[in-house]
Length: 284
Image (cartoon, rainbow, N blue to C red; front, side, top):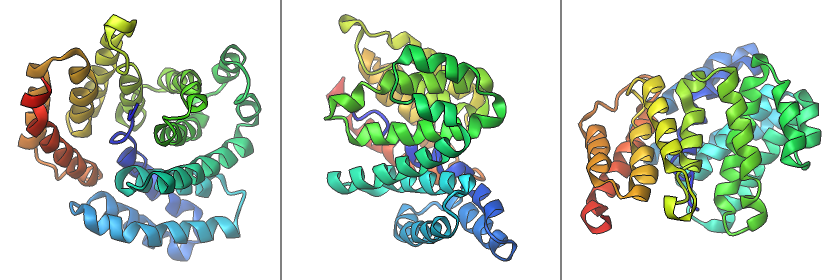
């Protein structure tokens, strides 16, 4: 269930520039410009080589202010992004995803104590707690859900991890209820991937996945090319729709990847679209 390999990386990076607000005023502009430069970079190797230094910098900020929720979220996002995009070694990926989740968990337990206490409870007990969350807490809720998704992705061989998917789905659904346009509909992408894991013959409901992907396309206004890639890879391949598969991917290759704040994710999308198209005739 390699479900979120290409989903997590740069949705998490999109809001990293916000970490500037939690650093001293002397370094705010530096952090903001650094994050923006990463998002607008079209060379994946430069980002791969430069990210570890930024990770260490955020670690040092967290060491100095261990209860700063904004800083913990920023650390969680960058660790999740770096792991999903660049780490191939399975054990290292698990270790770094664990760190991403641990930062997000610490933030959740500081600011959303009621949710934190119910994470290990049954889904039916968690749902009424999630229903009480208001829009002001959506960024934290979504950040935790994103980190949780990344952790599940690298632990797909563990049935205990897979068993947590319903709770993750509940968090994403609550995020949608609060504001479906948050991060240009990124929650719909997660939901689309999650709903496109099981074929109809085995009881799956991939058409729900298609509806989620189409909503994500609408909310992102075609600027985020990763929407097309995930739609093709997860839904189209599940239902063997080659025509839609190839159409979505060709749109990626024809599009301008240089979109402020999305150049990096679009660069990754184009790379993956090229790979999927090359496999199309063999797969279908």
